[in-house]
Length: 484
Ligand code: UDP
Image: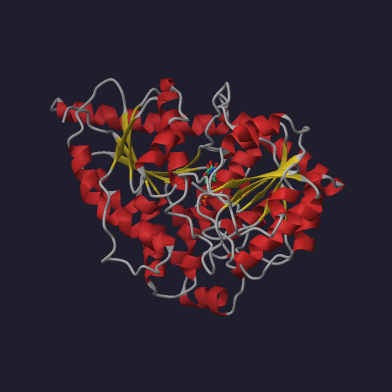
């Protein structure tokens, strides 16, 4: 393998799931367009058709190499009923040998390896192959704080949080309420708990952390992570807030009947309803949501999937391929009665394009971090409907700290949210004064995100600092290659 003397070559590793792929691709694009890096992106567990459709979203000017690592068979390694996170972690572990051989055969040696949260077991490859190494947190800094802090607490603090159900107090950060806590923390010593603690401990062993947030959004949390008297004693390494990593929508916009429909609706009159790449609802909850939308009498676009009982991640590994089936699980007559008011889209919709459309005035969202940042950069206020992963923390942050969302009285994972409440929530965000205030606030944040990303802005500068570190490391490699 040659040591390249002109360009920095970054190798990025994306874990399974569109929510993980989207920010890695976007980071790859920025490394090429802002920093003139060469980029190779290694992807685990992506359906070829899904990967291809995601890549079509990127302009030719931001071309990076994408390598799909060979599929791994985890059937004998994981209980089929294990959580999605456990399955992802095992897939990532089993992919490390393939990553090693793929990096080794690259003609130009990468100077830096960037893995996402579930790829930390690949970090030792960086030492082996002389690369700098970073972890990309595709979520926010508060989630990162909880992930790195929890493994360092003592038994008493752990009991207080998990057994006595008291908030987890994190130095310098908003406490995490028990009902919002990460599923991985709940069952001591089970597989997910052990894996997650390992990840929390491995992150600070990297050279730095890139996080999909921006200074103004999470100033207090970021400050604590940099202060060695606060959370900095746990995180220890430099934090680079480089977000929001949101894919740009191509112009002219793609041709799609949903966008044509939106073209004919009044400004900010449509609520978009989506549970991300994998979220599913129970049959009873779908019925209530359908009635809630109908009763609200607001225009809507609803991305629907067949109901799944007792599994809110029911579509995680199968989504994104689209479906032409007419749904037969909605209340009788729903589609006919609402044919003028709304659109029901089975399985998958062009979300980034929809959220950008001026006719969209609200989103009911599962609060995945990509959907959240996509809503913020388009100035769209939210109704939170958290389902899994860190989404309950996100929902709390969005409603209580940032003020860009409203939520149901009870968590949708704890009880059915009934039609009357859904009707009220939708009307509040779309037509009531409360919605107007939240809309103004989210538009302020939209400006703050734009500022952070623009040349000289905080996220732009953070990424430039990563480039400076890589440049120094490259010079070291070149010097060594020349026997200096
Ligand atoms: N997405 C989409 N169409 C859909 C559902 C999701 O384009 O019908 C995209 C969405 O725009 C986002 C990603 O898939 O970029 C989902 O990521 P997020 O972090 O919001 O949630 P996750 O699916 O990881 O829970």
